[in-house]
Length: 297
Image (cartoon, rainbow, N blue to C red; front, side, top):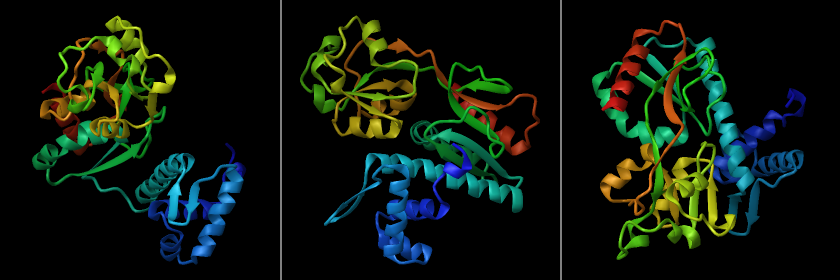
C-alpha cells in the first residue's frame, strides 16, 4: 500500500483511542476533542476502508471482527513508531534487551518463565515488542526475535527453543466418565479449535491418528492468536489441536486433558533468532544464555 492510500492519521488515532476505551466520549477526553468529533473521524475511517469497525447499539459500542483485527494492527504500528522514536531521538539504555515475539508465545511460554530471568539479572530491563505474526526480517529495534519455522532464515542465526508435538486437548468436563484413550473418530461430531499460520493442522493429525477427520469444515473455529484458542478450550468450548509448548503447563495442572493417544511431530519449532555475525552487547548475551538454558531444561 502506498502512503497516499493510507487513511489519515487523525482517523487512525481516533479509532485506536475509541477502540481501546470502547467509548467515543473517553476517546475524545484523551485526545482533547468532543465525542462527536471522534465519531465523525471513525465514520470517515469506516467509509475509507469500506468496512464497519464498530457495532453501534443503544446499550453501547462494540468492535466488529474487522475492527478488532484492525486495532491489533494499529497498536503494533503505534508501538513500533514509539519504540523507534525513543531509540533514534532519546537514546537507548545499555541495560535494555529488546525482544520481538508473537503475543501467543509471549503469553503462553515466555511470560511464566520471565521472573526467573529478572531474579538473575535485576539490573537489566527487558522490552517486549509483541505482534500477531513476526515480520520476514529482524527489526533494527530488536536484539532478538522468537519466531516459528524450520530454523532457516537468510542472514539470521537461529537457536531452537521448542520441539513440539501436536495432539488434541480439551477441558476435563468434555470427556468426564469416558474411557481413554478415545478413538479419533470421536472428534467427527465435535467442535474443533485451530490456530492458523502453522504448517500442520487437524488434517495432518487425523492422518497420523488414522481417523476420518471432521464431517464438515463448519465444525472448526479458526483463531489467529494462540491465547484466544487456549482460552476457549479452557472454558470448554471445544477440542483444540494443542502444541506442546503452549499446553504442557495446563496439562500438568489438570486444567486441560489430552484424551487421545496419537501425537504427531511438528515440522516447525520456535527459535530465538539474532543477526548472524553481529556482536551483541553483554545484556543481550545474558538473556540469550538464559532463555536457551530455560528451553534445554
